[in-house]
Image (tube, rainbow, N blue to C red):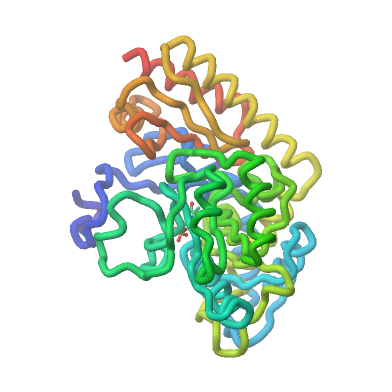
Length: 393
Ligand SMILES: *Cc1c(COP(=O)(O)O)cnc(C)c1O
């Protein structure tokens, strides 16, 4: 395909993109090069937590861009300090390192745990992770992930990531040995198919890791920043993890991520950790604007209410079409199909005229919904009506 004077073939082929170019976005809506409108229930993969081009982000970006873009990570800047303070004030963590992507934040978590193990657990370095987990696309985070096929695609893997079945505390217990330094998990497995960890499992995991003297790391790249109706997913279980990573929603659409840890875990020394763009004021200014909105009165209650509304509407749709129900937490939900029509429905939803619908099928029998956290009930109704017609067709 051509766009203007250029061929799309100049881009390295990594995925099958549809023959259209998105030019503009507003709230829950995207517009392509032919002016066609799409209702967006993907939102950049749970990234645009306030929808497309929200005024807070546009203003934060333009104001900061006119003031200071990059003094260097070797110096403090105002937005970096403010965002770190807001995050530690509103979580159980004491210190923050900013990164650019979820994978990079997870790499930092792995390094911090390994350093802590070298200092405190006789060089222990293994981090127990889970089947079907997703932690990113760098070599170490691919090795940590439990995605089928990822163990061989770029072999050899980074070693030290034994896998347990999710929600199986006895299996984790059995894997803990002298080399184990931590357990790392997503409070809801997002890419794995929207599979929530049971509250009792998270609580038992915290007790077990504390009793065995190892760390608990939560990867909240997808579940953090209000996605589940609480600011962070771990809060549903009332536990206090040692390390947390954030990404996606923290930047509301711009590249920003974070590694957070409790004070007694923080053992990096100068030279151990860094990155050219870490804490740059352009992105952290956006993070401040996003987090202030999430913390505004009633915002998270509204996420919970709209999550419950979406859940009810999906259950009704499931009953009407003889599907297998729905699951999820807050505004991270999945409709469980009775067959493997997921990819076909996603394709037909995109192509639907005159208005398209953007959905995702993380598994062939599953449709995933990750709308903007400020999606309206009317927009949920519109999505359900479109999906209803697609399921009938
Ligand atoms: C998306 C995701 C990542 C990777 O984030 P990137 O910004 O793509 O590197 C890591 N962990 C979880 C749970 C995710 O959903």
